[in-house]
Image (cartoon, rainbow, N blue to C red; front, side, top):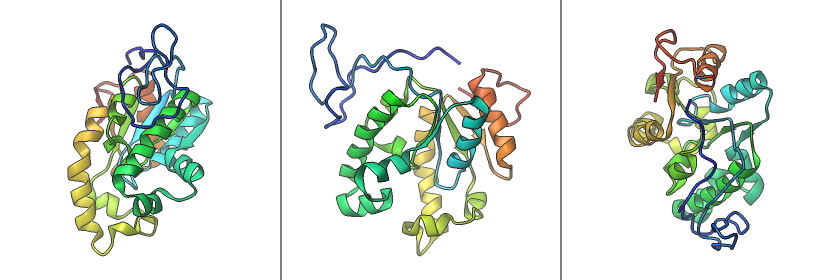
Length: 218
């Protein structure tokens, strides 16, 4: 895995919280640019569609690495008092994704463990640029296995009345984005969490290769 750069430059989150930005001479750029961030940030970030196992695998990976785990959906609910799904309904997707970008900037500054992002977080404007310095792993899952995940629809009622059609469209739309932000892709279909976390940790330790079937190192 390549060494992470020490900061971001020129990322406009439209409302990123004050105090995150400094110009080269030490002055504030204001709230609209993220630059010169010097915190190390998360050792591992997991992305993928709802039900791909980001939280389960993230918890296991954090335990193995001896670091803390954070679920970004929980961070959004804690910060704004509503679940991500409720926030989308209340505020509209455009404003919701601005809030995601703002909060993610904070989390990347203060969290040095494992971070699981919301399924749609990487699709927010400027979030791919925020993620670029970090080790991001895409947990890939096919449609049939996704539909078998217990509790998926109750947790994501927006999938109704046709979960198959909604999920098919979601996977087609988001997969190129997940792939673009990821340093590695780990398949999860038909596999247990312990198998998946082994492959994820191999990417963190830089040992991905022909010995890890189906894993793509980018």
